[in-house]
Length: 285
Ligand code: SF4
Ligand code: SF4
Image (cartoon, rainbow, N blue to C red; front, side, top):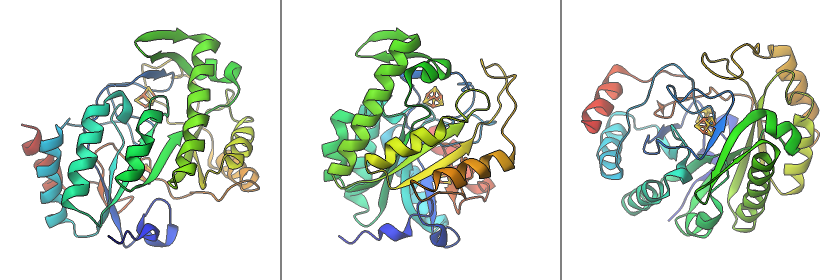
């Protein structure tokens, strides 16, 4: 099986006009609450809020994938990016990855997670040759994290405030380290939230670089209604660019992220075709 790692359009700028990706929306639940997230929309890990995704079962997702590949031959990557967190739905996530790997041995597989519950699955992810994992790490200081996360649910227990942020951050950093030991390419997303973590992202970059992260994606926070942060303005392109330049001291930067929906398909930046929207609706019914 030859996986062409360089064909991932998110990790390789020069591949993004040639190769596409598909997100399979099979993971509805989340195990944390970010103060910028409105669950009526998709996950800020990997999305553009505004339209709620259909949710598919693993078998429905396979049916949908077959049709998507027939209609969109550019697809080189199958990813799972929500609309909740893949590992808050581990059975569905792992089953889908197994099914895709069995049917498409040369497909790149990719997962985007908040990192809380990925740890127990890293060995199997590596066995399945899931080559790319993204963890969204917005803070490494629990005090700052406590302003970003309303709660964290871990092993059926609810955590809040600094305790919640500390737990999440420790799990994220542990997962990043283990992913690198397992040979997985690791991207870190950091959402820039003005007045909350904008001056802290550089510390995130320094820390995750030390743990072996391969690339950093400094994403501007996307203002959504009905959230704790709804009155915070989005960072200007100048601020985002300054942070990218500063963090570039530690890590290569992804600058072409399009904040895709959890059911995005095709070339990055292109909107889903009407035909694919119809296929998704059919697959979910
Ligand atoms: Fe929302 Fe994603 Fe945060 Fe979960 S991890 S609360 S789905 S932004
Ligand atoms: Fe790639 Fe960004 Fe889209 Fe994720 S959200 S698929 S990293 S372009």
